[in-house]
Amino acid sequence: MSTAEPAITLYRLQACPYCERVVRKLADLDLDYESRFVEPLHSERNVVARLTNKRTVPAIVDEQTGVTMSESANIVEYLEQTYGDGSAAADGTSAAAGGDD
Image (cartoon, rainbow, N blue to C red; front, side, top):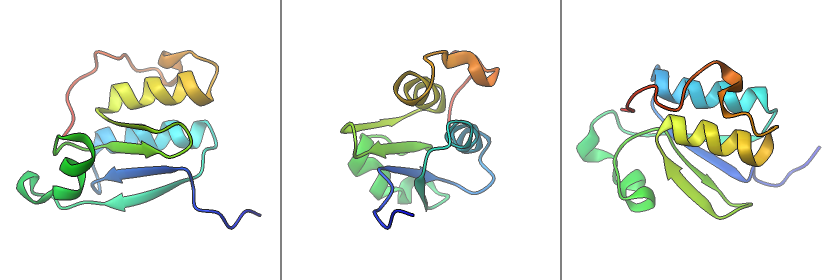
């Protein structure tokens, strides 16, 4: 068992469907990650804004590849391309499936 910090950090809200979409993809790919829950109010999500220049979640930081990004569809596609078989729609969702919180 590794004692190292997970390479991926997920910034998220509780009960956020867009965040849960990313959580499902991380689980499908059996990737270790650290969850960091952020403030529910957009105006108080300074940590996310510093990382992505946006206050929306989900957002990830992948220390292994140096990638920082937001928007669930983009994150799911990135995870599938980087750690999966390259089929971004493998979770049954489309990249055009809507906005994040």
